[in-house]
Length: 160
Length: 160
Image 1 (cartoon, helix red, strand yellow):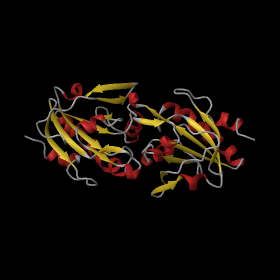
Image 2 (cartoon, rainbow over the protein chains, first blue to last red; image 1 turned 30 degrees about the vertical axis):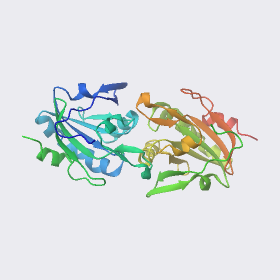
Image 3 (cartoon, helix red, strand yellow; image 1 turned 30 degrees about the horizontal axis):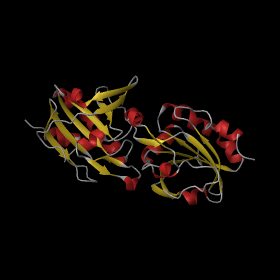
Image 4 (cartoon, helix red, strand yellow; image 1 turned 90 degrees about the vertical axis):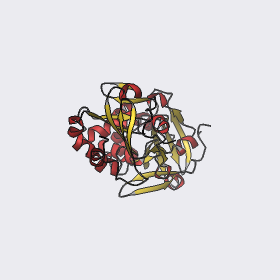
């Protein structure tokens, strides 16, 4: 079941490396704040690296200005996510989160089979707007598309 | 079953990105040549990036001098392998191969569960010396170790 508006964010753990390896509970991450989570099929892949993440980096001050946190996730391990973030010069505060085992992705119902590209099971490209752990808007791309989950589109379609 | 001396390399396909995405048959890769294949748990992870791959980069001219090709593989997708190779300044000729779906790793019996680090199923750290598609020597590490699969160790223990 794909996640819908009104659903609570499922509780799983994600990983992140800063000083060391951290384990992050998704309820702790989303509760008591406004946040946009966007998911990408793969770190270092062309659309994710040249367009999707850079768009959120560019618009990050605007999200912050509106009091919205920005989280990026992928079914890549925490070492790869860290290297990708460094290569993209991600600003402090924009968090890159690793769903390396794909648990969160499956719990959101947003998995896709990318085995034909040698990538195994990955996340679809999407964005979710979440308030206090409850999904308020979904922006889920059809496979291969990059339209509704861009930073610009999300900013223009946040619920009032 | 873990692969043994005398076994033929299993036939699967791997991926590599140079100009574009390439699909590589392992029999075509190993037949009619001498080769060392080394496998690492993950691109961009500390031991793989600071010690294992750099050792093979350093010794690559010596392997070539002996008429031996060097292949590196990991259960990482081809985009990540390409980015890792660039960040490590891998020389032309030393091939980084993506076993993104883990098929080759499972066929070699060298998989390990790295889910606790958010990495899913990966390859153990190992090296194989292969002549004409048949394994002539194995250098398989115990989990967490880095001893017998180093470039230096492999060079010193190639069969005569």
